Image (cartoon, rainbow, N blue to C red; front, side):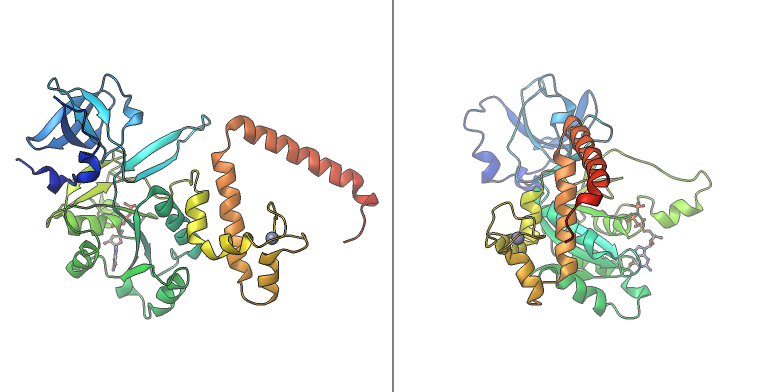
Length: 342
Ligand SMILES: Nc1nc2c(ncn2[C@@H]2O[C@H](COP(=O)(O)OP(=O)(O)OP(=O)(O)O)[C@@H](O)[C@H]2O)c(=O)[nH]1
Ligand SMILES: [Zn+2]
């Protein structure tokens, strides 16, 4: 199989980074293993090694330049990057997928629907640099999807929302319209909401869905490897198994773009470090009192920002914070009798 680089998503953005790349050839990574990478280039499928860059510095979807010995020499600047804090205590970043154009946030019209989670995923998409599209699945099992749509739309009047039955072939068409060739898509959402079903509809593949797995006597097909696959009508999907809840990372920017009204309001507070609690001249509390701002929305914003602060601190910082906290708790309990009433 041969490809045109443009069909793989190559554009002037990457070309402009290749002025000094004589003798090097561009490839797009489709799978990453410890010692070798699968990739696609003009010549079709190839296997690359990476003596210079560790596997952890590369992500599926990356554009790299390789020498004639098929060694990766450089990774090109990314248009977007999905990453998360790695599991375990060494607070390191794990690269999940690069150069994803559209991030489909999938949730179903039932108990899975959770506005705070959707907001979190929106923040993540903004932070990564992907265009978010909300997909509400299981519309066929729901009497009235309008309440779900309205609640999600209230987050952002410009948010694209697709309401589908993921098992219906029409769903793949509706979704594909938001990720046209040669763009790259990825799906994120809880387990069982229909990500695999939608992916199969787009790739023509038959990866096992939750329903199939239930019937499987052996239990589960657990794949953790991320990989890039062609869509039937052009364009690409990066499959991110296990990516149900990316932990936020450095997403202050992402959070603020989802809550831009609050971020804007905050600039009008008298104190630049206003916590919007008891400070005088607080524009945020004034808006709540005036009924212009929903208290729950403020609470979600606070929670997200607190989570973000926690995720971006190092282990040492987190221990120090916990120590400070327990000291404070002790101090408060000790001094409780002396405290002035509020
Ligand atoms: N009726 C109906 N069933 C659906 C819909 N979307 C998904 N399902 C079913 O729900 C089950 C789970 O779907 P999957 O596509 O495996 O869900 P997933 O998001 O990939 O789940 P994980 O792989 O666990 O992350 C399957 O039995 C699907 O057929 C839908 O829109 N309508
Ligand atoms: Zn304030």
